[in-house]
Length: 390
Image (cartoon, rainbow, N blue to C red; front, side, top):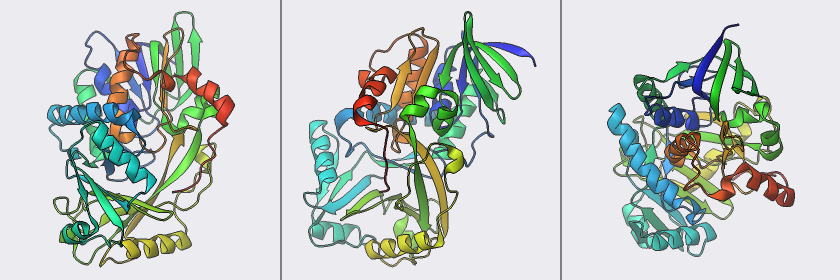
C-alpha cells in the first residue's frame, strides 16, 4: 500500500479527535490528517445520543472548573466559526435532599469559583419546576451557566471547520497499528500507511486495542440513554425545563430538555459490569431494565408515560480515579488523550486545545496528575477501575 506523509495524524474523529483537528487546523503550516474507523459523525461513539449536560457547578470538585469555563468560551467560538447552534445555555438544575454529598460539593464549587447560580428551597422547586416531583427536604441548585450541548452537531461542526481550514479527513478507515520509527511514527491503516512527525491518540474506547499501557489502565463502563414522552411536551422545552441531575437515595437521574418536540431525555443506568473491549458491551437495554427505569422515572417526573420512546446504549473508557489521561510522550511524538470517564464531553474543547498545545511541545496548564506516568503510578496503588452503575 501507498505510504503518505503528514505533520500530525489524529487517530479518531469523535469527542476529542474532532476538537483536536479543529484546533490543529488553525496552524496553516501543519499538514493535519484525521483518520476515523466509521463515517463522519456516527452512532457508535461515546458522544452519540442527541444531547449532553453542560454544567459548571460540578459535583466532582474544582479540578474541572477552569477546564469547563474555558470550554464554554470555546463552544461559543465553535458556534461562531461553524454558524451552528451547539450550546443552549438554559441552566442545569441539580435536585437532591439537603446535605446530599454531591450537591454539597457543587454548592462549594459555585461559592469558591463565583459561578452564577440560585439555590432553591423545596417550595420554590415545586412552584417553578412542576415537571419534577419534589420530595420533602429536597433543595435545588440552578447553575446558570449550565445547559444542553448537541454532541452530533458539535462533532460535525468541528470537523467541517477543520476541513475548511485544510485538514485532510479519512473516514471508514481503521487503524491497525502504530509504530515508532527513527524518523517519525508509522500509522498503519486499512487504506495505506502514514508516516507522521507526531500522532494524537483520540480513539476513545478503542484506544485499548492499540496501546498496551492503556489496556492496563482503562476499563469500559456502559452508559444507557432513555427518552420519555410527557403528556404535555410544551412543559419540557428548553426555556421551561433546564438540563438536570436528580438524586434520590441511591437512584441518580440525569437528562436534558426536549429538543425533538415530543420527548425529553432522562437516564439512569442499570448495574452493568465493566468491560475490557468494545465488542463485549451490550447494544441495548433488556426489557426488564427498561421497565425498571420507566418506573423510576414516573416516580420523580410528573405526568409522563413510563414507557421509553427511545433508548440507546453507549460506552466510555474510565480511569480508576476518573481523571482523564492527557499526555505527551517522552520523545514528543505521541499525544494521548483518553479515559474521559463519562463526564468529558462538556470540556472536550479544552482537551482539543491541549492536544494542539502538546503537539507544539508545551504542557503548560495541563494538570500533571493527567500524565500517563502519574496515572500508572496511582494504578499500582488503586488497582484498575472496578466500576458499577449509577
